Length: 449
Image (cartoon, rainbow, N blue to C red; front, top):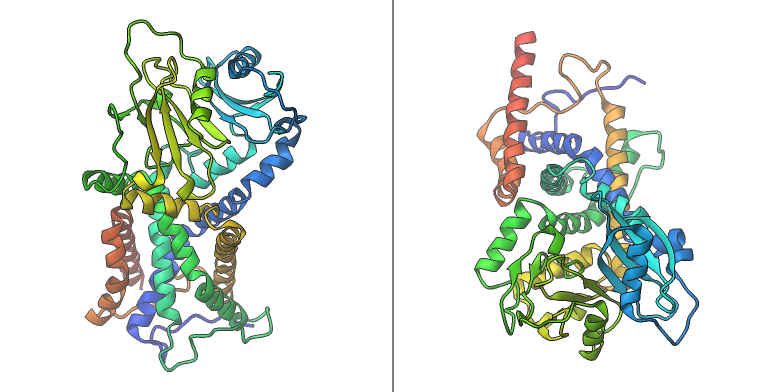
């Protein structure tokens, strides 16, 4: 069968339609590999607890016992067995779970140590975070380098352009479009893949857009701008009842406190005669305040800073962070969900839903469906292009429809992409680059002919 391209003046296809189709195609080229990787790793991360249980179950579980040793012995055991310094740990709730401690090594590396809370026996040591930490770094592209966070933001913006242009292309206009079910029966023909692509986008587009938008706060540029706006307008972090928050460097930053409170520390009591800070003092204080287990305790490298105990949560309404003086056990702040501003609540709620924890199994599988849909859309898009590609991929032709240069065409494209380019500036900059490349390619083709 001879593969045909769409003629430059295909009947029934308006200029705006072809222009939007062209940029839908380009958006797919730009983001498809990264988007598929993020969908795969994001789908795996939804099952972090189950995967960790399968890989590290032998070390993570201990024989239940009503008695426990002093928490300070957990730290001694982990540091003796690894030669490092404990930075934080998770105090477990069930009596059959091990304590997980993050240890900073002298060479700058990290390890996760598992200690039996009943006898302080070191059960085992793994690379920091284990398998799921690698999945997380692949998802955020941090394995490539710190600059990759900007790439994630650009890809997310283009993914939104894909969704919006896809809706435009699907929308019924009195033609045979706007399908709501796969009508073609033969997978060997292009109409089957076209229908599959359209139907998948129709039912999963909103979920994909939600995943993209709620992932944006993690980004280096847009996320920082959002948090700055929230902070400047009093919509974010709660005010401490005593003392003041300070922004800590990396080695003192608490973990498990959510993105709103990331890096926020509180000075401890500056009395001259102070005992040495101890984990046992902090655990006793946290338990005494009724902080439900499991909770994460962060140990600052600076002894003048308070320790942080933050509840391990599934639902954002259960958020609770307690700042405790490691020497005296005095509580400097006890923060709860109701004290956060509306901007911070929106931020944290979006992250919880994005990670599939906020609304139980339904939330998790809905997000998984979005991840699977990205793969279906990507594969069906590739197959459709392959079936309609030019006979020879040469002379700058790759199968995209030609667009007549007129104001109506430009208005159709700009009406979709310009608001997103303004909302997400890095995407806007990449769009300008893409436009310049497109103009250059078109000019080169005209010269060639």
